[in-house]
Length: 313
Image 1: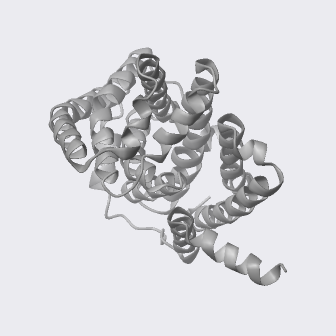
Image 2 (image 1 turned 90 degrees about the vertical axis):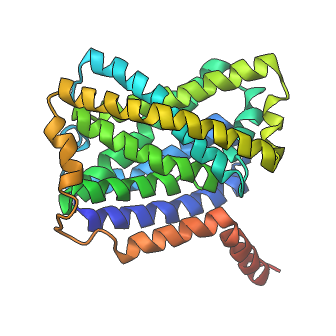
């Protein structure tokens, strides 16, 4: 499967997502109001179009997606990489909160009192990483690699990963996280690496959430009203931490590549970035991004509401 098919799959995914979200909110609100059911529904809706395109293209799923074994010591180092790369993701999240709310924090805080830890962990740290990595670092990334350089494929898959989260705060750090995930996939040659990375990161957030709220039940009410000064202090702190930990994370990534015998492949992502086979950015891709932005800004909701008012008496 190439980039043209992937872009059509992306556009169809967003259109189906919009239709499904409207249908669920109208006819099955219990799904929309439940984090577990809502998350599972969204993941399935996002997976199905690209999965169908992959099967129609007669790709062998296991080989195409890149499910290969990795060494146990590499798994441990992926955990270390997750820890060392987290400050830069937190930094980006804080910077974005100057303009937008931390929507994920708000949702998780609201659902925490309703869901036991095990169920929250299953939803956020296992189901979401498996589905989203199959979608983004599996199907989309591999499809774009067939049409051009790994560098461009990495950027394209990271953009999709950012926008399918449908909110500006999460999209900001998800883009960078998507780049880290691709680098781990290429360092190990396996999609399991990005699944583990994603799972470790999300799992850490869930553990932090429940630990923090166990100490202070109002802790997650505060970030929704963070003052500019508090944000700036937080940004300064994480800027310092990121400056220290990001080079260490890069060293860990290089170590993983050497351990797995893929140093040349990892470095090739940057050296082959001028390679061009097919056009990656096509009209369906641009339309999908516009539709995502319409959802994220609320313009689509306003537009649909106006249309319904004209149609319905």
